[in-house]
Image (cartoon, rainbow, N blue to C red):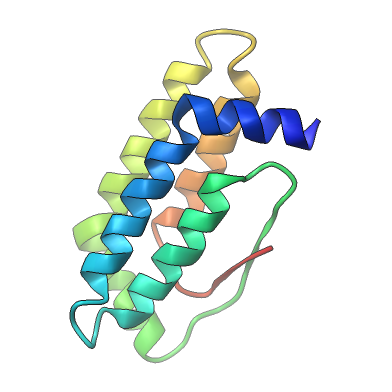
Length: 120
C-alpha cells in the first residue's frame, strides 16, 4: 500500500511540492544564516517526495534554531502551511483523495516550525 500511495502521491502533487521546497532550500543556502533552514528544507523535500510510510519526530529546538524557527514562521512558514492546507482541502472533497488530504494536513503541521524536526 505504501508503494501505491507514494506513486499516486508523486503524480498528484508530491513532485511539485518537493521541487518547490528544494528550490526554497537552495535560495536559503545562499546566505550563511539561512543554511540551517536550507538543510531542513532539503530534508522536508525528501519527506514530501515519498511521505507514505515515513514519520516525523519532533524535538525541542534551542538557541539559534529557536530564533530561526520564529523568523521562518513569520516570513515563510505560514504561507507554505496555507498552501498545504489548501491542497489538503481540495483532496478531501473526494472520498478517494481523503488519505492524500490527511497527508497534506500532516505536512502543514510541521512546515510552520521546521527546525527541530527529524524525518524518518
